[in-house]
Length: 361
Image 1 (tube, rainbow, N blue to C red):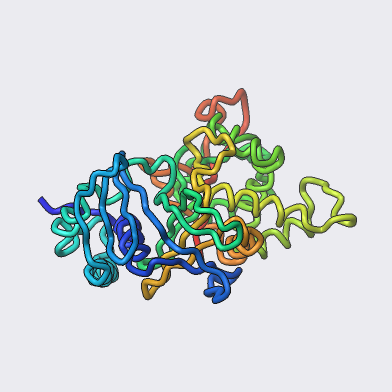
Image 2 (tube, rainbow, N blue to C red):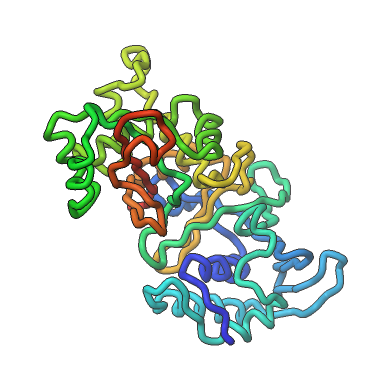
């Protein structure tokens, strides 16, 4: 049976082929345009438990022990990369699809997996020639693909819910009537229009709460306010939301002395999300992607953000992302309905859970 994967997953294998085909990767600027003055030479890519793809005048596939498995002409790798790009671009909108000739290509690459089996360390592990230090470090990169739709930076699930209290309380009849409305957006509009306050209480999931606190002790409160203003003011752009928070200043920072509190803390969230932080996995602050971030652009070009262009990386994430609403269904993220205290483990009151994901624009 042919292997199936979604566009993002197939793009990881495409990135392997494209890096080997090109032999180098250019850095990106803050708008994801190529920096013609900075690129990194690809020397070797490590994959699975003990595979190495060495790029010279040919691609040499070998074990870490030095045992050579095969050699492939670079022209063949170029053909494979082009074939993969066309297949991914044509791929359906369903979550998973197969690619023509993928089984044959995987066999020639001596692997049977679409993703690196050691993906917990990074999406792809590359030894580059660093033109700045003249060293040849092993770097792990996170990969985001734009071949399909706009990718997500932070993925939502039930663990990324935030809990809010509604005051004044609602009675059972009001709760039932509100929950019968079409969407949580309509419910929030009704609450605000009718003089109710929606105030952040906590992050129910202890792991996600701890992850946010590690990044910044006020980050949960900042995200909670972002979500409220997203629904009330219909703002989704993160720069616009940061501007709104700066005006309102819900955390009472010294904005007069430094107006960058909210934008800086949001950037911290974006960078950590890009390089490994997830809602349901304990985050230690150690980046899985020690080299940075590879973007697979529509058209197939690869560009990267490395530690040396870190400021560009932060600015790119900040200026090209938005707060998006994930699936609120009970089998997905399970949020947006009005809840009484017993349903959320509180002693009294009326509550609502809200959730979010961060998507590129």
